[in-house]
Length: 184
Image (tube, rainbow, N blue to C red; front, top):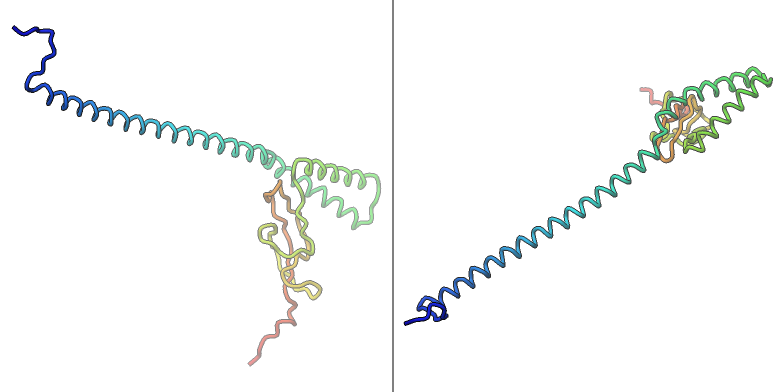
């Protein structure tokens, strides 16, 4: 009589064991592939999150750098009026304490702007640059080459490296007698 606890192989025993081993190997391979996919997904997710954090920090830094732009833009009209007041007083030959006070306020505002990264765009006598200047008019000029800023009607300003408002300018063209026309 055979012992029920003995491990005697039945005729199917070695073949069944081999099939079971193959199934276990297949499951192991599937588990390793799933592990590798999950590990790859986790790494990509981590990299995407780190990129998101870096991008977010850059965007926040840019937003903070230019946060004063709307306020500065609104104040430019006040500064323009101070410029006009000083210019009108100079044309009229006035140098009294009121004119000096207005000029001091203008100077203080320009200093405050500079401290916050807002600077005037120097345009007078410079070559016209559509990135910095807005041409309001063209005027023939013998003293300046064509495309040179002849007059600044309204100062332009930058905030750091961005144009807050372009300078409104009059630009020189070649004199009329420099471009003779053919008459037939």
